[in-house]
Length: 102
Image 1 (cartoon, rainbow, N blue to C red):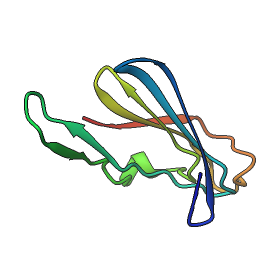
Image 2 (image 1 turned 90 degrees about the vertical axis):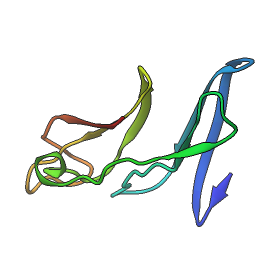
Image 3 (image 1 turned 180 degrees about the vertical axis):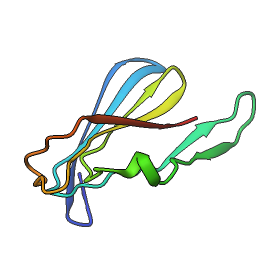
């Protein structure tokens, strides 16, 4: 599947309502992550948007994209490598960082 010039590989595994959906993109350098998601309200026929907070301050230090996202214990988690000043996007010397939304 592709959208606005970006290719997506969508796969699913598991059975019934217990399935894992994986979406991978094949974008180039500086691939900044974002999420568009919704949660189903318990006992209601409605959806609520999931908002991932913007990165700012200390959480944004060394950020150059290459995000990965996962649902961990009912929370949406975001993980990305960090870069030090002077690092290229292909060669980082920083550590991984985590940021999440509840």
